Length: 261
Length: 283
Image (cartoon, rainbow over all chains, first blue to last red):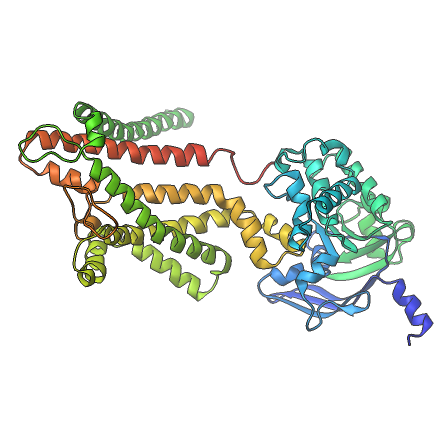
């Protein structure tokens, strides 16, 4: 039987990271990061280029496994289960932890086939069920209104902002628990960016979101928690409001106020 | 002379030189096309496509057996060369990072450089001798061996052009590696791969040397796959060195037909298969 206090603490942590250290070859990319990501909240990772925030994000769904010469030490827990443990299948993990990339990367297929790709890979063959899933995912990603009458059109004919929302819909169709976003709006214009940010607000009721961003205002607007990374280390981590109004560390304040970075 | 004037002068001279070289290259091609058309068109008639070669001394006749023979040779060559080349290319692009990949790539490049007559002799020793006679099959094997390295490298090249971001997208959706390859990477590169395969086939369609010792020639229809067969390139060779004027005319006609087929395949590959532009859309 579990202790009530422990169960409560666990329920406040969707992803628990302990002493995560990552090397690319001989280069130290992340140094002993420990951090908890609470469920149904948006956690923003900020910091200058090369600070390790993307590396950290990609450790959460084991995308770094793909990189040759990578060494990963430490623990990452999803709902208390170690994701780097023996017998954990990275393919199954990625089903629970979805990802949206900086540059929209729709498959050169139809809009429908893009969204249906994940469910099909995971064995969903029923056309009625697939249609429902596609419709629901596109609605969640706030794209349904714009594409409902042309689901068979090529995804590559959509605008940049639409493509990125399509990628979000595609990730949602797998019904993940966590959504990782790696600078999802950095290649978009302000209007498309606003749409994505609005979407992130709505999505957090269903998903735990971790977002990497270079844009301070964006971090302040969309996130509940903010983590500041610098040179592979986690400098400060806390409620967004606190980080942006009264950071505990001088380095954080320097970065946020634009004195450096 | 000022610096600016000298620069302008050098610019003009170099531009004239490069235009001149371009014109030379193009004029060779157009001369070739024009001359073969001029020589071949007069002997081209319906009977060329429908009749067997006429006996020596008799006018008329065609090369229907050589047309069919070339087609069968290409089918046999494709059956051998395309699967091996295509799947080998998939291996190289997706798994061929290590020593073995380097070895395969190197072997393919060496095979690509082997003179075609050597391929013909090798297949003669390995296929024709054991069977005891020349055959379409042996010719197909020789051409197929020549297709392998070309198909292999072009498949690899086009798969490598598929953006890494597409692979990442599929991996992040929880797709196992083979699904990523079969459902995302290969379809994304298919247009280019198909182009490469058609070009590889078109290239061997004009090969003569590997057929001399394998498919040989035949003045009649070749039944099945185990008889010697006529083919356009070998027919051209045989007719061109014969001492009869009407055979020379027929050789020109055959040359024109072969050229048209190869050019046609090239055009199809480049303009039909390539249509649709780059694999990745706008950002």
